[in-house]
Length: 350
Image (cartoon, rainbow, N blue to C red; front, side):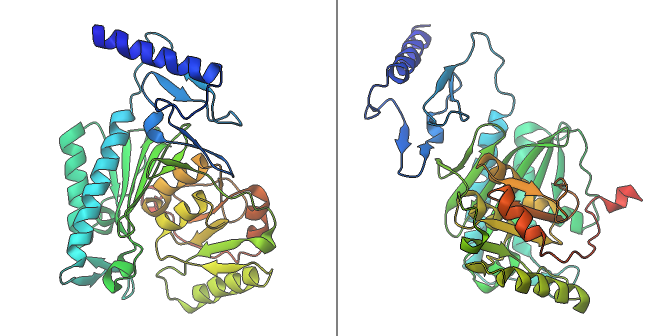
């Protein structure tokens, strides 16, 4: 009881600090200012207080009402971050030894024993912590083995154990663990661990996006000519699709834009949009496990998601534009040559 009273006094004091705008040099106030925007350390968000992210200064702080219901997904979110780090350590360890390479849909659609082992580590860890029956699972390697890709109203983990397998095989330094969580088909949080860079991106719906506990946000560029766009060519090597992919890239490059880039991992690409390093990422042929976690991170960083035809974003459609704002997104969409990609949930649609 005494501890609760002490903690209560601390949070009351913290509220008074904000109310009277006492200089933030006090150790108790974990708010950091930069020349561009306010950055809030995620560790400053507690069960008793939260930052009002709609405030233009990011300094507004509200105390939770007495007896308010505990956050039902905070534990799952924290554990997802822990599991992502564990999985990333396994990937780094595997990269130091011989990598056994196999293929899935084509000779360029690679999979390794590491992909399969890491997915098993993630799913087994989640089942051990939260039980086997309460949650659904969509995992890249599980789907590759024939398990249906079904997103229902049931709380569901969406997992890409090694996003950037080709990078991993060749030692190209962008490989990510991607873990997302959806409830009633709505994404609640996403975690992307760029394990070779040792960068942890994460976001919860309505609570902002972070990289290594520092808040991130998309760039404010609205002039397409001053933008960097990121995309990938995927694993489908059919000539007609490859032609459309590179035709689109040529059209965008000749707008002109500052440049086109590609990291080789959709999850990382979306995080680059979220932290303002690039203005947009688009691709046709990606899967839900590639982009689910990144989708939360981009939107919580102030960005937006659209279909490549300008319509609403559909997680299962295998096509997406993520951008810092609507101006950039719509300008890119004008140049995209669309080609068909079978939906992730096509099996259950038939």
